[in-house]
Amino acid sequence: MPFEIAPGVRPKRLTIERASAPQETETETLAEAVRLGLDARPRTLPWTYFYDEVGSQLFEAICALPEYYLTRTEDAILREHADEMVAGWSRDPAMIELGSGSSSKTRWLIAAAINRYSKLHYVPIDVSPAPLIESAQALVRHFSAVRVTGYVANYRDALATLPERIPGPRLWVFLGSSLGNYAADEACELLTQVAAAMGEDDRLLLGTDLAKDAATLEAAYDDAAGITARFNLNLLTRINRELGADFDLDRFAHRAVYRPDLGRVEMHLVSRVAQTVRIPGAALTVDFAAGEMIHTENSHKYSLDGLADLADRAGFAEEATWTDRQGLFRVQRWRLRD
Image 1 (spheres, helix red, strand yellow):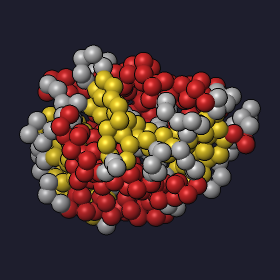
Image 2: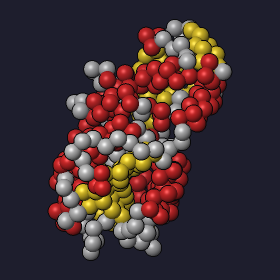
Image 3: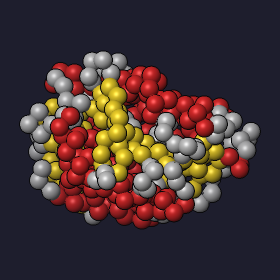
Image 4: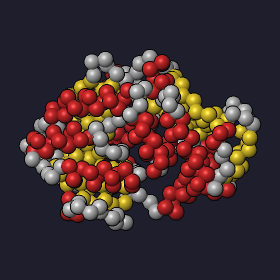
């Protein structure tokens, strides 16, 4: 499906393609996920549905919060080391970013690549059309030597089609510790798919959050301003809108807790009272007990040994790594293992 290109942007430098399923299929998929998750014990809802237009805006606001150290720390690492991160090719590599969002931190890499190679083909992938289109338009305005081909798609669909459409060499970029949303086996599966899409001249630039004290981590996912709470509750708003549910957001509370035994921060929605919620679009009625929780998201925090094991299992070898002085966050560049 074509998208409208803003005035002043040269179309030949900007293409946006929708590779995701039609809206009807997405609604059916959401209904099935809600049905399975809320029928389960403990109850769950999939984090992948956080990122509608409002959810994406709220996440951008989270990234600017004082408690949310991840974004500013990773941004500082990229700002300081971008030139090293994009080095090593004899000609310009295409830059493919999984979960690009606003592409704000990626601008350091884009600028460094243009400075080194004189031009760049940037390929952002995101499930949310609005931030993808907005950031793509801003990038072609700001960088005269960049060409953007954006894909509204999930990772699986993008990884299945992009290798044939975007010739190498390629720098695959996966920032923001987004990998941490996946359980260990799921993270390994996703990275294995990335490895299968890569050629021997390709590299993966991966940002990961490191394990640390509970107070720092829990504050990052339960900020004083309540933005993360709104982000979590917006999932219920989406289900109300798309499946005709009657969730009363005032009857649910946000909770974030660090589980060092599992190496992750968990986000939950907690029913404040005993209540019944009807979800016609999923053919479901759910009775919640007071204090009952819906598990909505995990954010895994990595040790160096855990990252090394993950790279090995997925078929990668570490080529270079960068971190901040406090050891909060890590960016690594991986190549395919020989």
